[in-house]
Amino acid sequence: MIEHYSFGRIVIDGKEYTRDLIIYPDKIHANWWRKEGHRLHVEDIKEVLEYKPEILIVGTGYSGFMEVPKQVEEEIEKRNIKLIVEKTKEACKIYNQLYKKHKVVAALHLTC
Image 1: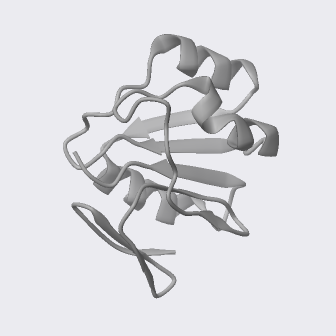
Image 2 (image 1 turned 120 degrees about the vertical axis):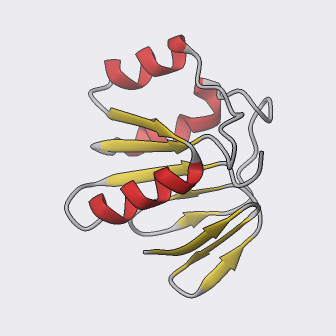
C-alpha cells in the first residue's frame, strides 16, 4: 500500500523511496530509469509487459510532465493490459483502490 506521496518522495509499506519506481504485487523495482526522463518508451516498461498485469498505472509526475506517447498506449492495450495514466498523486490513489482486487503494476515518476 502507498502510504504517502509528495514531490520526489513516496512511502510504501513503511519504506521511503526518493527515486522513480515500479510497484509489482510482489516486489518494487526501485531507481527506475527511462530512455528519456519525461517520455515513456516501450523498452522502459519491457519487464512490466512481460509480467502481464491486468492493469498498468502510469504516474506522470507531480505536475504531469512525463509524456506517454500514443504508440506506447497502443502497445500496452494491444497486450490486453488496461492502461491508466494520471499525475502521480492521483495514480497513487487509484493504485491503493485497485491493488487488492487486481493484478496491478504502477510505474511512477516522482518529480516534475
